Length: 558
Image 1 (tube, rainbow, N blue to C red):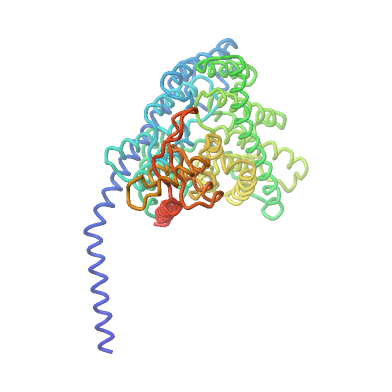
Image 2 (cartoon, helix red, strand yellow):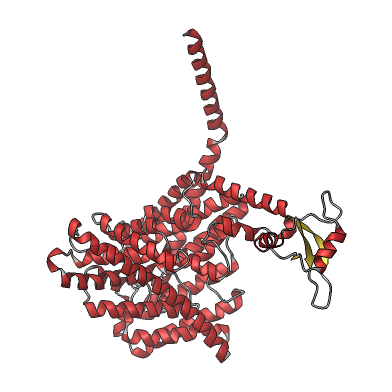
């Protein structure tokens, strides 16, 4: 017994010693990082608030009101020429900015932040990002039918990238800082601290590692404080009265509505991508300069806004009307179709902005349309229109973002209604399950897939594209290098990879040819023979790939 007590005593001393060492050496570093996360969160939150104030000021100068909840009403009273020309002027300015300050004439948004987290150690572009923020500000102030979450997320990412570069942190810390900045920006933009934190984890980092959770929550809280100092503790939408569900009889209706919302979300995303492709074909056929494309889109938006002013800006006035049931069946249906068209035109015109606010509006209108039909068929077993609009809002937005958890929570935080959780979750689950089968998981991941960035399939797919063969190959004359004569024979047979290739290209060639190595060459020109640079061994490629997979798994489970 004495021996057992002595052994337990020594184990306790050892545990206490290790705990003390950890507190001495690791805790200060963690506390320092949390302080950095707090500062980054405050800066990102302040940028989101400033961006919102900037939209309000320019919108007030052009449309006569800075309140997004009355923009459509004010636009309805303006001369139709003014409504037509404001988006055109905005489009012209956006086109010029994109022409001179971006290499590809494309506005940066959430998908670029996701790409930066996965492939660039948590960093994003700076010059193109600043230009994109300016374009989105002008777009949202001059009638563009998009949302402000995309720009503020990328602005926050630029802040975290600057901090990460100044501190020279590694990829894991850079991604954590990126998650902190994004969470704070979303929280500050929508007064939604819980959803902001989960958005950073679910959408941008795409994992829920414990080491990232605490600093991201700290940053999200900082962003929320900034928002409440500027706007007070108020929700974006005010719902009338209370909402209740006839659970046993009505839940099947929410399952069905979730499927309808999933189809609407998929149609909305496909409409945006189809419009972008169509716009590109028309631009090429007519020979239009790139800088004129946003202005043409502005002309189409202005013409549409003359009859349907509700499409201007983020659309919170119409969303509020849908949530209060203050629209008829025909209005709700037509407004849904027109809003999808307006968002598609704005995106196809490369005008800037995000898709979250439009998806909220389309979802609320879809839910209200469904409510009109459902209550007409079963009037005695149906809840208030507000509940259907609320659930529809979450269902479409979750399917578009590919973020069922954070979107469910942001709907609750935007409305302050936590009593309808079951109805919203049922609709969200069905919509995301269906829409993810019709697109590449989400709007953002589909955007990346169209740019040949394969993040939707997970790290096992995109990690291969991060390794160039020149970084893994063995050069001639080094230990274990391939025989040069054998390499030249293989080159003559067409068995080689160019030095610009990645493992994504090389590994399938190994599987197809069955060789142990492939020569790496420089392709000088059509009339010149490839120049040998080294050899990529199959075993080296697999080792590099396995190390990357192990590092990713360690980060996601730490």
